[in-house]
Image (tube, rainbow, N blue to C red; front, side, top):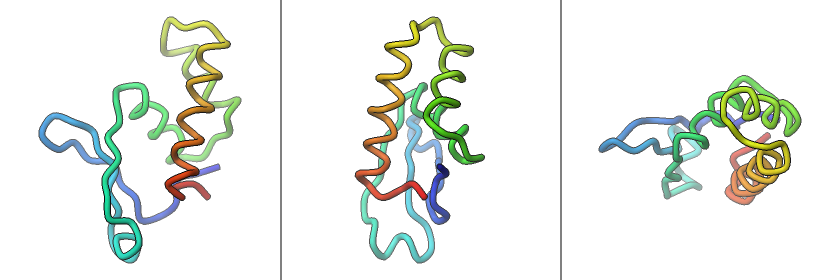
Length: 87
């Protein structure tokens, strides 16, 4: 899976936000704020990954158990899917 074209991550006022650009901005009017972990996962998804790859990356980068990492990844991916940001 991968982030759809037309969505970018920017730092605005000290917060990381996802915004739509170009044609995508016609159908997506909001912004999505990401915390540090969400930003980390976003960057990995920008290059393409699956849920197992995201979970492995979290386990390598953060001090977290596998169950928590997998739950966090599933929740993150579900939110992005719900906002129609994933291919």
